[in-house]
Image (cartoon, rainbow, N blue to C red; front, side, top):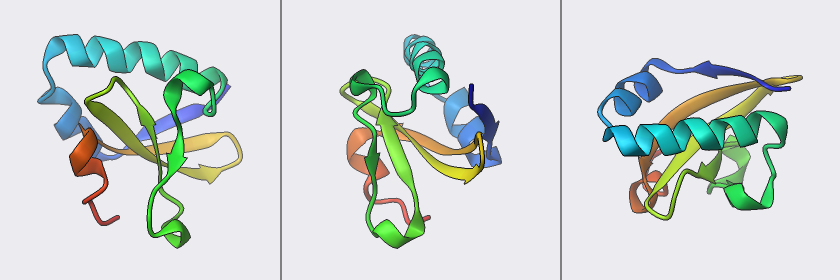
Length: 90
């Protein structure tokens, strides 16, 4: 199972989410830990592809951006509305 490390920015953004979105994110995180490419997550690599930043779907409105860092470790970078996650420069 994956170990998830969270960036300070992710913690800040997560704390500002409505509680119902936080609950959805927690459920998706459980799925992600078991299989980061589970079809329900819609995991995708973000542009530019050389930055090695990926995202997965919390729901139709929110995504979590992350990086694979070592072996079974993942760094959660941000959680943002779907349209904003593509505008962030990591």
